[in-house]
Length: 220
Image 1 (tube, rainbow, N blue to C red):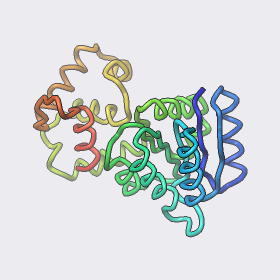
Image 2: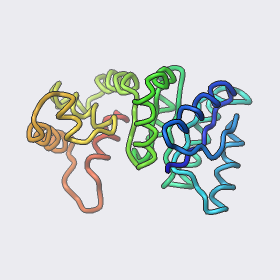
Image 3: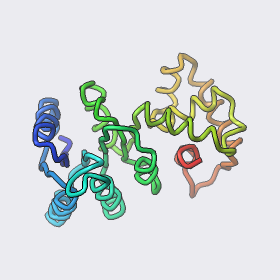
Image 4: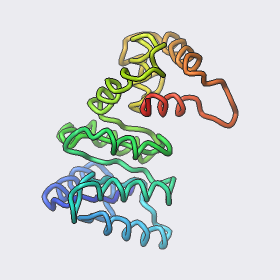
């Protein structure tokens, strides 16, 4: 059973998320209303050797309702790399998405709150992040893609390669990309190889080229 901590200052939404996740077999071990309480709760659970699998947190929380939630999540990712973090936001805020993904794309997600209404997709995202995967809202990816087109680093990619890289940034496997684009697995593998080549990502035992490609995409 996956263990979840929810950080959301709206009691109604926090209780709703708790009910939604528990109804689908996840265990919500704590619910808090601000960034400081989130940090304290995770520290206490870690000290008791009971670190949860994933945190679901609002970007904006008290006292200033600016970036307390995402700041707490960035801190937690630094202290507990094995902890999955999924942040929820009312709007696409590129800076916060970039900060959250700056260190690694493992076990991280950024979704718009509207996605919570799509229950199956939301729960799948929580489970994927808890397992070390990535869950990025399609609107976040689209906005980041629009920004990346203003840069030079991805200029050499074809439209199809950009599309494949965008789906990779959502945390999808090659098989999932192939299904989404209705092409063969071999075609996706060829696109991915071309992306690595054009981004100058030579194969190395020390580096994960897929992660590096996604980070290049998100930071360009």
